[in-house]
Length: 505
Image 1: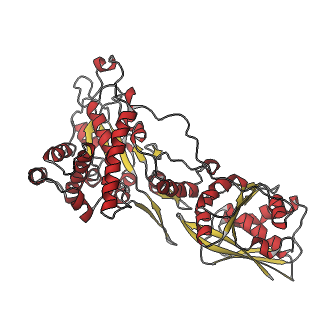
Image 2: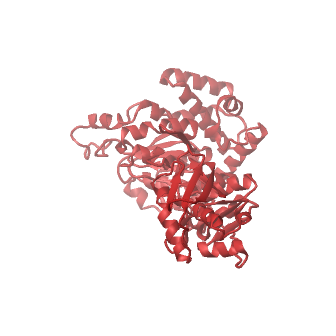
Image 3: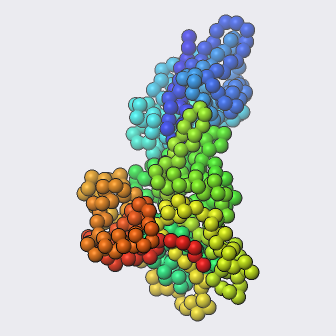
């Protein structure tokens, strides 16, 4: 007899079905685990043996073979513990075969038989629902699985309670899908004094999902401004929240299985490696660009990041996907993020102040800014100078307009964009920054004098085709903020003012 338990393996956020086959045959007592398991899966033999022992059960003295099919797919992670244990219990006659049929099982076993939470329960539950199955998982992951829709979820705290539930001697309470409780409010834009130009650029970036680079001396408020961007963005739609949560589930970042409607904000340190930003490592984990999907990726001290790590951002910024290439397989993660970066104009940061700048100015500024390649800067829609805040500005009372007022205008602009995209049959496009090709031509065709201005500017500033399209996207956002149906010359002019064309000093 061969006992079979369904489980899953992960390639990125893609779920692959795995069949756990357990056979007990006469012969010398052995416990063989085959099917290309990694170290964590291979070690499950000892965890399973100890968990069964905690229940008062011992493996029979037979030749035990466990095959994880398909055998040519690499199996990674500790979530194979539970399906292996259930397969052994079915093969031993402790559980009826029909008790686990129609379920996908995953979970990690502690030595005392407790079930520990594992990563990837949400995509596994979505996969199980699509195939008409239920899911068996640890109790701590049950709320996460409940978000998959109308699906049977068996969430057990221990292996013993799960066995009793399947045998009908105990009833486990179905888990409930819950939203995360957002701790505290977002930082308010009213706390930033002065910097009206930077606030304007931040509003434009929020309204259209545009990439933003802020250049200014230390203490000018660049980080403060970036931290207030999430408070201007509309909450995630239900579809976006599920999309983001799938990535966070695979990364093991869904606390108590709760889904948040707040947009992600990731701010990695400038020592982050290529793998940390894009994804990778021995198990090809999602990187910061994917964890910031549908949210904001803030890179402070941009030139201090490793050059290969910065250059690796170019492809995700264009395609919205982060591809991790391995000899065995290619793993792709969604990475539709909004890049916000900040930097000093030079290493000392005081390039614009002759009294404070170092002796190498302005050459130090050229060398420092040269760490950023032209192709990367070409992908940034808005580049602004953030000057030092004067004492007079600091002495002023707080601004009358805060995040709530700006967020209302941003929300209205986003609503106009969403209605326009729905009308044009492009419901999957979320904001102007994602519009391309014929869709961009349809929504951002300027008036004749605006076209002439853009053509003249492109010739004089030597704008690339990419820069041309990014100017049009920003101009469309400026028109949306003013509730204008057509892009006018003034919108094109302001969009052009945010293009970086050379050395900033």
